[in-house]
Image (cartoon, rainbow over all chains, first blue to last red; front, top):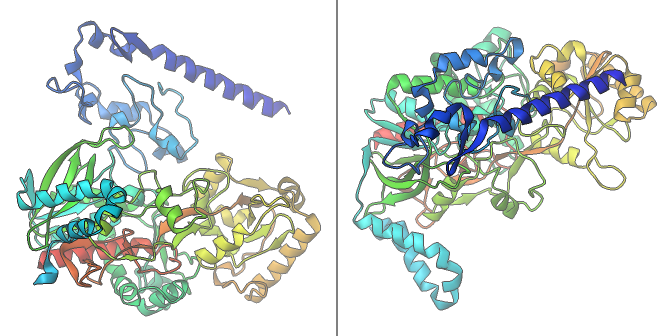
Length: 128
Length: 511
């Protein structure tokens, strides 16, 4: 039974780590929830950092995040080895580098990775 | 000239003709119809293109490339999802081609006629033989289009259920994206305009009943309550609807087949909901074979969607046995056509009538030849056993009966004849079942809709009132119906989608 218990303990740790991270980054700002690592946006109410200033209620353009974030860096930071190579969410087997950021990442709400619609593999660094 | 009148005007008359009794029932239907009919007379166009394609799966991508090759200057693909590829980016990437380069290399005798005959047999007398032969004859050309775009395939062929010879290619990453990604890159190179989050709303007709454009909702966010803003897109050469099937539309599929309730899973992505098909019916297309909805017998009871087990089982069935856990005996030809196998699997029940998924047993030394085995074991949807005793214990199968079944089956391998279920044993030659073993548990999932809108061999959509092609309207791929009949053979959808997409482009470019 020991290996099984160890495994369950590891699973529990990962679960806790994910939950804690999720709660850590999604914060309540003035009138809206947002990510703590984007707190600068909320100090100055600079919605236009991401949204079209004329239509702030519309979702940002699919490439809005890439104005600051470098896709190649993102690909590197989530790279996986060996037979998991194509599980890299930023360069994956089904869609390559073309998945719009907002399909997995929520700035004002929690979201889950697109892959988890079907697959069970985990993204431990992902902020839900 | 009378029969060429606008379909929506006809429909409007029909609705009016139904009178007061029908008014309540048709109220929801009537309003969009009237609005669309109004559009027709005074359409304000927001965009104009030479060729308009709805959907970015195999059919839409092949059509775009072919249209470009035939000289189209301005081709656009509208895709409702955030990502391109549709269900085509999800499937196993298996492509049946008769008289292929690999068959030549392996010395396998085959012909388009033989492939179409295999398919017609599985179609149980109601398949469209003319279309099957048309696709089989041009499958090699379609394969070449993918190779030219950069698709890579395993250097060997597989023999899938219902096929009389090995004729199936598979992408080296064992997924259809091994084709859609290269085709998408090719589209980009050729200057095809690719628009995501663009939901097809309705077709736009001119006064003579010809399709001259489509209403598209730009900025559509699937599943997020953002329905988008409508634009009118004019098309000089008509509209190709390549929107796929409806495996995930539980209402529509269970209306055809009441056994396919929400409890039955699907291998398709959640967006396979068939609105494009419904619009074709709305303007008068002929529904065919709508109740023939295929479930995949290689899917797994232990994972969601297409998953890993599907490809694993497709590869391994030829040299494996599937046993009913209660008896330890085989219950089917493991490479019979899909319907035969799914029907047999659904009979595997426990004493209370609940599903008791059959166990498919493969020798480790043969299973490991395909890269999916590692995934199946790693993600806990398959198991490895060093002995038949361990296997029987884990799956709760009577040991003695199982041992006898394995011994009996190995006799068939030796003889090259399956006396139990008549399985073709060519691909099992020399592949005896022996420890260590790998197992998976199979249970069918909704995979493919044979039904759809009736098209002719030129991919033109047929009108249910005139029985002539609706001018300017084309359909290709799973949205079109009737080609395969009762059961589609594995690896025959990719050639269907690719060839009919190419064909549609050729017809459009001649218009």
